[in-house]
Image 1 (spheres, rainbow, N blue to C red):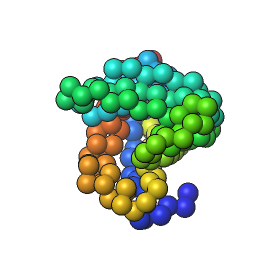
Image 2 (cartoon, rainbow, N blue to C red):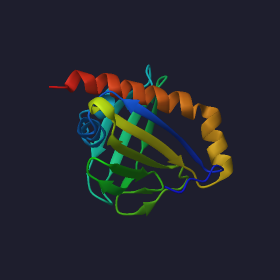
Image 3 (cartoon, rainbow, N blue to C red):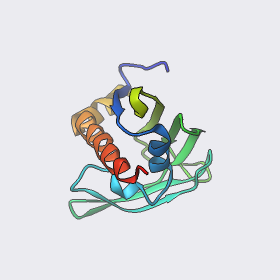
Image 4 (cartoon, rainbow, N blue to C red):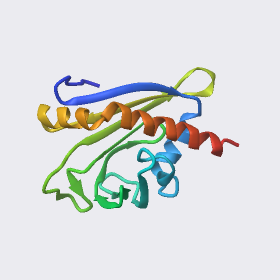
Length: 156
């Protein structure tokens, strides 16, 4: 993956759960509320149509404020990669004020874990700096930890 340090924020972590379970958590709407936003914020609705061009819509409650995020899946490689964006909504309708494209890469890690790489790609260096100042690393790091903790409860 060719990353641009001006527009792409990213990190890699090892999660102590199998990557197929991480894939399931990210691609099934019933799982999203358990990890997708840092607590105490919460996901109040999620609608997923898992196909390229299909919807990935979420609604958040952030300190009493309802925030709707409509997006689409751009790329799906089962168990390995998924890419979604808020640049478009379902039907390839352009968003008036897009923020990012998210790229998540999964690979096997030692002892049955997952190497989890999260990339937030922005349209401009200014948008990336804004996201960084909003707490990208802490926020997305918290989400990765919440994902790992939740996925562990699903291990059979």
